[in-house]
Length: 337
Image 1: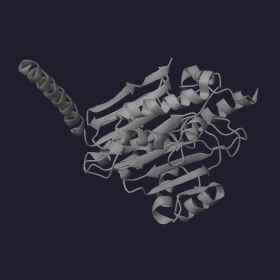
Image 2 (image 1 turned 180 degrees about the vertical axis):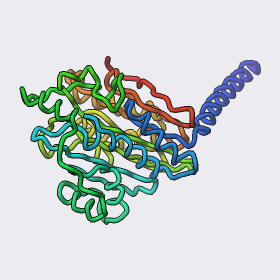
Image 3 (image 1 turned 30 degrees about the vertical axis):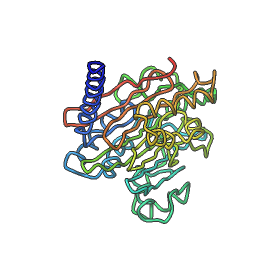
Image 4 (image 1 turned 45 degrees about the vertical axis):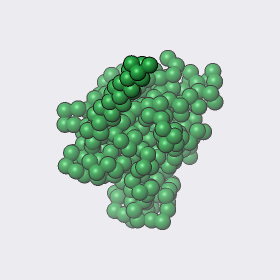
């Protein structure tokens, strides 16, 4: 009996040591930044320049996604595909470690909606500004009004779409084998869907922040909003627990308050990966057989520096950076494929 007791204690001690070693390894990865899709590689580089010198996570997540917003492609930013009326509308939100948050939606002709969202957070009593009001605020804050014209890639894509004027989304189009600054060859059929870059970061001081910016679904109905500018759906940060961000079919992320749900699962003790998985499982339960037609991906960072992601379907990936030479693209686990 004594021998059995000794072995039980030894086994528990080994397990505790292994878990402790894992957590300590993760905690050494501070600062840390995660972002969605392969566009996150370049975005992470800009964020890392802030984090590696002890900068604030909030500054990092703004600077990081600005890289994607500035790229002239059919995805995020003014180079993105338009709505069905031919206008590019942008959405973004940002949140810091103190529950401060700002958002803009249905914003036109402003290059960096994420920076406007931060100004909303810091300079107004509101959380969200939309449409003409958001644009007026941006202009008052000194943001220049850009030309109202489609980028060449978006123009070609829109002209292709106009031949049938059918909304026929293709999942996982955000992931491409070609450069984020080019049109992926497999999308030459004009069936563009949506794109988002979401970014969450943990700085050297142990504080969390997040950002999310998008052009929304290509050829969407005018006025449509997804989850990306909605605090609690596309993005949520609780500095005592963690940060989470979503990408994919916004309507279905909204249905489960995606990012906030991930945080609540983490608060209950789940790891970031498991919290993302449980949230995705809720979407699968709601959608049933129709789940095969959509994609949703979730990312999360816990307060202790552990992180993870999960997707509804195969094909979602995310970028992780925790050192100058550690900026890797990882394939997410998934439920159906």
